[in-house]
Length: 229
Image (cartoon, rainbow, N blue to C red; front, top):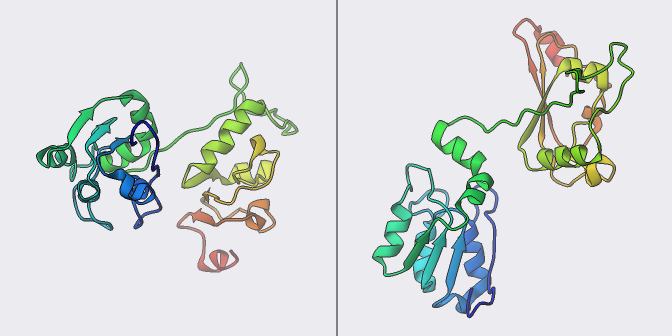
């Protein structure tokens, strides 16, 4: 921000590329001098796949930084804030912190535990059923729920289902626009099928959809059976 005008904005690019701060600073150019920066996460202060964001902020001449939350990554965890303050930059912490925690919850889970952030999705009737016994039922969820699910798929790295779901529903397991009624999104999550006995049919729809499919086969599936996939 410069004189209450947005001069640059950005979001973190794929791994190995620029973080949000650097993207915004590049867009702002010389207008970043003496400007104010707002970030949802504390800027990094260490060398990884990219140089420290604190270094770029200091070099750009930013006057003050508003941090929604500190980075839970042990390599940062307050050090980025301290670095900026030592360089004479005013730092404000905690604005819209709860919203930022929600935005960053998947990242925070991974850097603090080393395991993925998992969302479990169930569509059930009021009496706890997911389908009719005959298998002829289709959707339990409504339009808004399906729209939300496709947004979840789009923002996830992978979507997992069991082989029985493939056999019964023959799902596409893609992220689609307009709550599933529109076209297929450009970015697709990895489809992971848990199949202990190698029962996934090669005619399943998911094999003809954009994106990649990973079959998690059981140890008793023979090399010959694996080769068919």
